[in-house]
Amino acid sequence: MVMIEKSKADALENVAVIGLGYVGLPVAVSLSKNYGKIVGFDINAKRVQQLSDGIDTTNEVAETDLSSSQLVITDDPTDLSKTTFYIVAVPTPIDASCQPDLSALKGACEIIAPYLKSNDLVVFESTVYPGVTEEYCADILEQESSLKSGTDFFLGYSPERINPGDKKNTFEQIVKVISAQTPEAIERMKDVYGSAVIAGLFEASSIKAAETAKVIENTQRDLNIALMNELSIICNRLSIRTQDVLKAASTKWNFLNFEPGLVGGHCIGVDPYYLTAKAESIGYTPNVILAGRKINDSMSDYIASHVSNSVSQTPAKIGVWGVTFKENIPDLRHSKSIEICKSLKNQGHNVLIHDPMIDDNMDLEKYAITLSNLDDFQDLDALIISVSHKLYKKMDISQITSRLKKNGLLVDIKSLFSPEDIDPTYRYWSL
Image 1 (tube, rainbow, N blue to C red):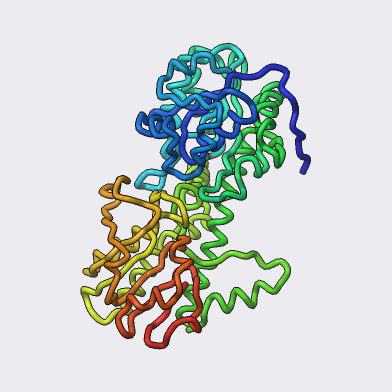
Image 2 (cartoon, rainbow, N blue to C red):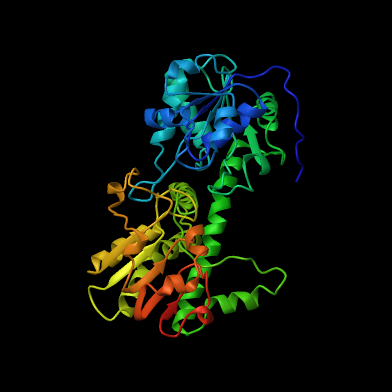
């Protein structure tokens, strides 16, 4: 792999970041510190006001970093009129049928198009399937602006690699893949991204190659976790502890360090469907990828069924700790922990939910959950530690098991503890 060294800009671009969520905000703040004044645009007026007040509800950017940056935060499209370099970082989710939902991407293109000028560069960071940038997005921009892609304005693609909650592998510390329609556009991307990304830039051979690289990164993780989840199901039936197997196997030099667990959120559980949808559109059924998705999507029901079958009565009093899609972030999108709660409720159980990362100001009704205080978790038939938030990891095991009835079940999905840690008064189970 040939790394591209950071280069100095001959003339500063007028940069705007479209979408100030988990991806766009860190990108915008970092560039505003290292490159110069940046416009940060979002259609959510509430989000814009919060960020203007120094509050990032995603917890990705500190208040001090927001206040010290040269970021101009706005929901007024006219503030984009002087932009020469657009970075689009809007969500690309899936719909109820697991098909790509490009509505936010379409909306971003429609916002940008009226302000497109000769020689402007539009770079997309949103996860897409191969061809979206040069076909789907180009078509919208051309229709709405009456300009021609590759002649009047230019396109680039630089897949986001933001890992929510990760304060080590930040935007600046992760190699940035870049691609564009022309060598001149690549040079402009080097100037802008190279001003902030310390880890270096890598030039992909084409925009489609970069788009495909993004979806395969998360697809690979999805498949490896699916293998571990299938292993855990087999081990459970054989009365073998999965962690004991993985510890033994990991002594081999080339064994990949993956563990079983819940796969939710807006990346690993979503991105593979972008690749499978494109594959199916060209007449190929991606059997391995879809099999991995099937296993990972089924784990919440598998866990709920095991718990329900392990309690002695219905309704049982069951506690669930952690319902965000991963540890230490306030994001509920595609949370498999919420699916566990729903499944247990549908089986007639009384389910109490706690999560230190979310509060009543969040849209909890959308997810049909109600939070309880930790003090309410007493005399439980079962307690599921579903997400390994820092608060739970800091607790002594006796503080946890004391909330269970005699012979109550502790379900430790992420294997924070081992069976030897548990008082024999209680039962223990993990993936």
